[in-house]
Image (cartoon, rainbow, N blue to C red):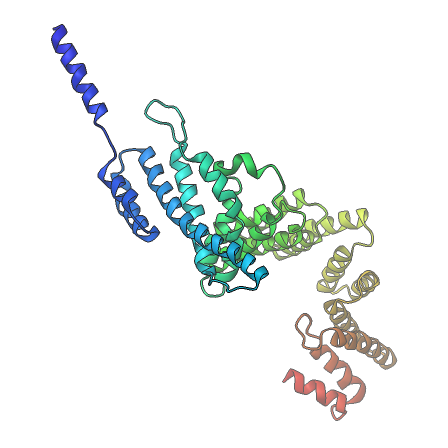
Length: 403
């Protein structure tokens, strides 16, 4: 029995001793080019015997991509010296260089994923982590250049480049180096990645990237506007609107000083017929900040919609005192004054109201001549027609605009 046990151990030992790389991994490691190796990895991913082989395969891809990176970097360095010496410059494959940095980063990140997985004994013993960290972190910034260069012709590739830059920041591969200094590009690249993701209709990614941009003070305002815009898309049912309302409420709790969220939330309350909520939100805002432009404008607009034209006019005047370059407010003023004129039976008062309205509407025209933000044309036509008749040149000019 003892002999048999020893023999069994010898057989087991021999299988371990002669265990080697799988044929799939051997084929990848023999590959001469990145594209060749990538095709082999994709076709044989399920043939690798374990995670360590997958890590080795992706590390080979990283090696091959880095060969191209190093080649172009060497040429660039030589050209710098040649330029100083006024000698001949060698051609640089700039796009090939940027693409190779992307290939190196994405392969390195995949290598890291398998490299840090527990082995058969449940222990984590990464083999490639340090070397990949040290060679990939310095070239990570080239992903931005790649995204900018390729964005005009291939938006999906640009999204991948910018997205890889953003996602790699918090990857375990760069844990030891990412926190040593602030990433000055992260907020802006996240914002741009969110735009590309939205254009590609990948809303989960768009929201993921814009949430990162929200954490950067330099991109916070733009990112917040984008977050609201993303949330407002596709509101087809009441349930969609209620969901958007909840999103706005959550954002307002986190950003109570935001006029953008306040304005959107106030409007949404009105849209959903929650006038009391809208009025309370405005009242609370004005109690805290009596000269808040957005609150003054929203209150006046609500009064206008409720045909409380005197209150609306008073409110719009207060808003104009705070901010005098918004054409829509002047157009609303004209609408309110015209409405009062139409309801009056006193000819003198009617003329006075229309003359006052002309001043506001012509101001709206001056600020926004192409009516991109305010449709001042029709109420101004009403004024001219009532004051000067249909044959007046001013009336005819405006009439041509509204035909």
